[in-house]
Image (tube, rainbow, N blue to C red):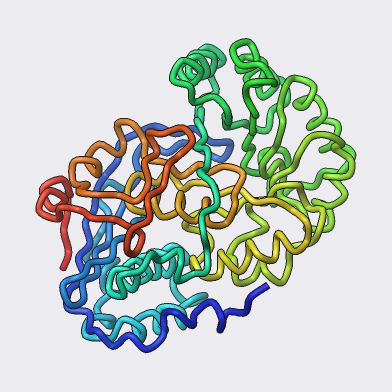
Length: 385
């Protein structure tokens, strides 16, 4: 495992001054159902940071169900970075971890890492010491509590050759979840599709108490229905995660919430909490810390996957590249038909192509994101500079 100092070495001593910071707010109107509630809209910010003619890009969700989000208030934290050298700005952002929102520090660091690579004319993955050895598969995600709709979405994924990895939102109700899994298996067999269920803690919320045995009994029913892996079935302690994985036999558990944020999880994860650990965008607080966390996960003998935060723009391609560089089993962060259309209209070039299956990668400077900001300005609801 590398140290933080070793990983940051390639980003030191860059004095080029930041001359512009631009934020583009876009409302994405789409209904998403989870065990904890419903999202009717998401507010995304696309960030551009410029220094000496090079521009680094990033993206994050800044709110949900808040179509009148106050971009000006959100942008106040950015002012202190203008005029800083790139390396100085990166140090300032890392010093704010734990003080600012994890999404904010991760957003800023993403743009700065892209900017460093472009300024140095080197791929950011190489600066991070990551060499993509193979392409990575994307995941088709189904967000619905309707058996009929789930079956239809599974058929569409299969017809488009996008069913190798399927992710199904589950709701913490055994009979409902079982019926949704069976609906997928009516269309896609175990031989052709690896099925992941994400419960978002639905089988044991933070204020509830369930025994490991009780949880395991429910999860075995889901496994018998055709589920291969279960992400965050319950809010339980890390030691209970280990016991639950032991009790679940062949069902693969995927811890997500216990890995947030990365700088803390490095010190708290335990071997055996699951067989695959979820590195979840927008909750790590830092891409650099996420890389260090993955190295720790592999050191305890587990595999990794890259999750999603309903990303639609620059952050999707960044996490696809990280998935390849980190050797992830799959990546959920992909551009989305409909939701990403506004972003695609502004794209000049990207280093990844998620239309391919598996996702292809072509080495470019930085994270390889080139956008037409005039088009981005036209597509945004609000712009702040």
